[in-house]
Image (cartoon, rainbow, N blue to C red; front, side, top):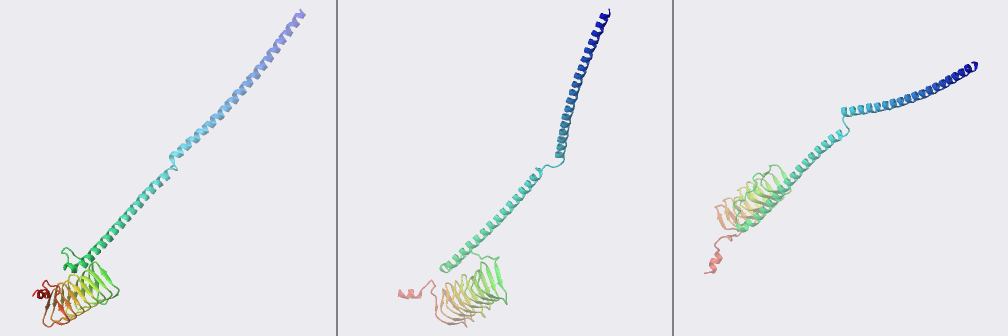
Length: 286
C-alpha cells in the first residue's frame, strides 16, 4: 500500500508540474501576444495621428487658399492693366497718325493750290484774263502795321496790307494794299497803292491802281492800270491804261487802249500794240 501511495503522489506531482509548466508557457504566449497587439495598436495610432496631422494641414492650407487671394490673381490684374495701357497707347498712336495724315493732306493741298495759282498767274498775261471762278483765300489776310520795319521778303497765299516798311520782295496771291514803302519787286493779283512808295518792278495780274500822292520807280506789268501818281519805268499793260490828271510818267507805255486826262504828263513813247486794229497793218494794204 505504501508503494502505491508513493506512486500516486509522484504521478500527481508530475501532473502538477506539467500543469504549471503549461500555464507558464501559456502566460508567456499570452503576454507576447498582448505585447504584439499593443505594439500594433501603437503603430496604428501613430499612423492615424500622422494621417490626422496631414489631414489637418491640408484643411488649413485649403482654408488659407480660400481666404487669401492666389498669386495668379495679381498677375491677371496686371495683365488687364497692361492690356488697357496697350489699347490707350495704340489709340494715342492712331490719333497721332491721323493728325500727321491730316497735316500732310493740308500741306499737299497748299502746295497744289500754290502751284495752280502760279500757273494761273503765269498764263494770265497770255490769256488777258483771270478765270472767273478763281478767288484768293479771303481768310488769309496779313497786315504790316505802321511803324514796322520788315527786313526780308513776304510770300502769302492770301491778301496783305502794308502800312509800314518792307525791305525785300513781296508776293501775294490775293490783293496788296500799300500805304507804306516797299523796296523790292512786288507781285500780286491786284495792287492798290494809296500814298505809298515802291522801288522795284511790279506785276499785277488783275490790275494796278496808283493814287495821286504815290510814287513807283520800276517797270509795271498788268492787265489794266489806273495811274494818278508818279511812275518811272516801262508800263506794259495788255488792257486799258488810264492816266489821271495828276499822273507823271517817265517811260514808254505799251497797252491795248489809253486814256490821258488833262494835266497828265508823259515822257516816252505810247504804243497801243495790244489793240485789235494795227495801224501799220492797215497802211500796208493801201
